[in-house]
Image (cartoon, rainbow, N blue to C red; front, side, top):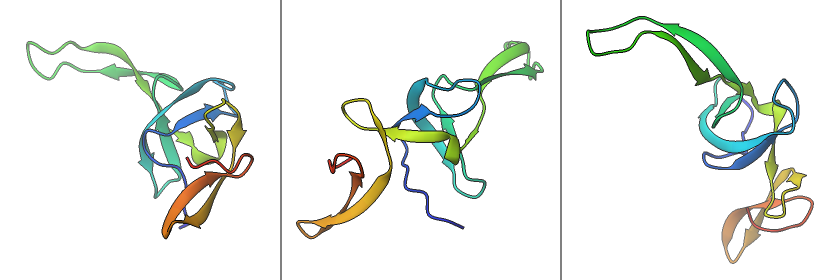
Length: 103
């Protein structure tokens, strides 16, 4: 299994697929299948059955997982970059490869 450098709550931009160019926040990371769920993006419709009298059945919209290669992390100025690691003040930190800023 390869190392995933993204973390939950990172702001990412979708670089491939139907939502290309849109940005959102990572809600969940599936490390086994190399997939991420981004808030409000890659919406899929799902038919849901009523579980009890109060529940509402029908068609709902949920965020579907995206492959991790289809997202890129955003820096503070809004440009996409890759992630690197450095030791700063005795701590290992994630840095943006383009700007060198700490993520």
